Length: 159
Image (cartoon, rainbow, N blue to C red; front, top):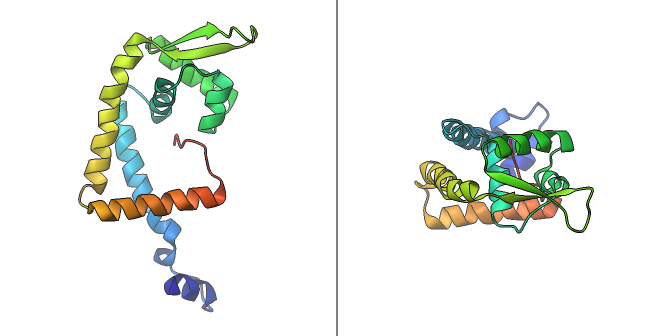
């Protein structure tokens, strides 16, 4: 904390490396880029993976609810859904309660794909965070969750 206060209180501009955001971004960029690359080898984007994982646990979501949870626009989520439907990983049905909207469900093929894709996410975590002790991983996770809670961040990151 002291170096952060010094970085803010000194007369000159703070060093780039004195900012926690710098280190978070450095690590995040590497972790995210490698995950996106690994998914791309399977012809899937991070947004598609995130949507599939979100839908996998549910009993169906409206596209608008999925978009909201992922922090995406209706147009952007429509493109993701179109790609997932083309892969036959997602089916859509008319909403029984609101005939003007539809509900998305993971298809049988999608249910088969999610565990395999989940392993890619698991392997990415092991690659980057495996060298840390369990205690260190737990501490980082706790701190990041706390920061997200303080700021009320609930959207699922997709980029």
